[in-house]
Amino acid sequence: MFITFEGPDGSGKSTQIPLLAEFLRQAGYDILLTREPGGTPIGEQIRGIISDLKNTDMRERTEILLFQASRAQHVDQVILPHLQRGGLVLCDRYADSTLAYQGYGYQLFDLDTLRSIIRFATGGLQPDLTLLFDLEAEEGLRRRSNGGGWNRLDALDLEFHRRVRMGYLEMAQLEPARWVMIDAAQTPERVQKDIQHVVLNRLNVERSTFNRLTS
Image 1: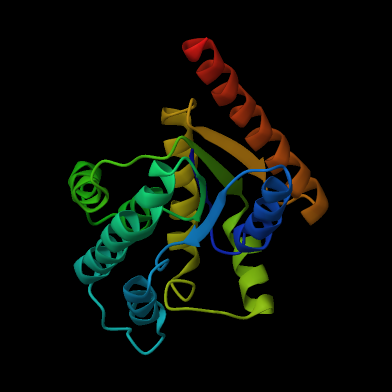
Image 2: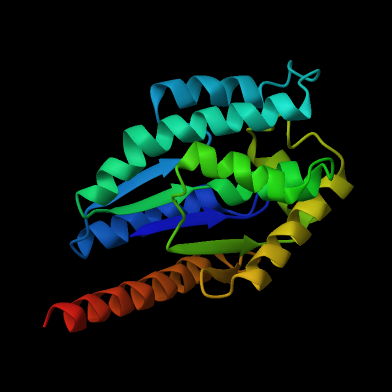
């Protein structure tokens, strides 16, 4: 099963996902925890280029293609092999981030064109479940500025980040079977409980379906 985690910067994904991974490992699941951009040595090098505050002259098309280059390597080298072994993949950001940030955020590119580029990079691999950590853009940026790790995309204006959030909400509305919204403004403990509840419910549905088909 392939589970992705999306949301505005500062929504708490990177804190919550390792906690979920450990919870699921203790429950007996074979977990791969990974992230985008990155997840491979090549991908991590690309991540550094994308995030570097010195690269302020990077063009939007360059940024999109760098994300897809990292993603193509990540899918082929890391994600697909683990899924093919029957494992469970937890990925901090995936293709929907490109649509949210480079699509809805910049408002310079046709979403269908972006989807075509993404399909080429991923080989058509889509998540089984996507959790959206929803948080107002102002609060997310405040958390980022207080927590460190400020990067080139964080430094874009507030209206950009508001468009990113609205893009996420629109995508979740268009695919309700795949997306589940998590209120990221809650306490970290409550957020983790909500995540565990959603994921365990989905895993139980998958398991019962498999058992029914093979009985």
